[in-house]
Image (cartoon, rainbow, N blue to C red; front, side, top):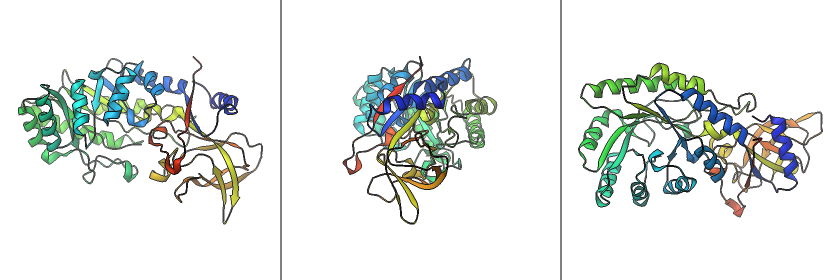
Length: 389
């Protein structure tokens, strides 16, 4: 794995040949992350799916594909991107609360591994479209377990107030309906309780909920081929170098200890941020430094390049790579977009900063490039990759 110094030295070598802003991906960090996942899941009936929504860059996808893991998809566009990257349809899960007919038909045409179904109307639509195509759709029913992961409210997905999944009290009806639909094959149950989860306690609660459900359906003679616990494992945005690889040991260990899988039952995971979050850095130049009632560092990158701070009040470590000053100042770090929310950080202590300094916004491999836009008609940032191999 490359050190911070090595990564930044490489960036300094290429920055004069590359306009800012740009995304820089340290492929050594990505490979080390994937290796750790492989090490901790070897010998267990586990299947890993990469959540493409975190970062659909074709080069990232091709590297992940080489590791033999599957993909979690939430749109027809992501299905097409995964097919183009060479992922096997059998290893594709299709999630999402509002799948369009053309997206469902695309999944059926390629006979993807599983549709994660979120409602009775969706189940009936898939059955109908499958009948028209003379197909049988593999599905898992997404359950809303009403577990609060205690993260930001905008990235919580498994509480009763969220739009996702089937309430447990309604689960019995949809399971028996799915079993009797002629063009549906019910494979299992799917769960996803949120994102950027750093405490294992919500996952312990999830395991206990799943165990109770499995006991209940065992008593009815209903066996699920697989259980899908989604993803949501967080990364350390404050110390990206100290903790370049997430706590996979605690994460997988929680399920090994607390989830009671049945014989011939596979456990699926859908990890996104945890796989790619730390390998990415957004590089930007300082356009100018100004002072009103406070001091502002104005960058050439904006919320069109990285919307997480504006959308979630998300923290990213910010580093000035070129300042030679020995003293610090307190700044708001902002972008050029004509919105008051175009702010990367408030009251951040940084070395005294000048026009032209090179700024690194860390831990942007997930939900950075993938959520970018051309708002204000600004061009998308380009991407650069580095590997020591």
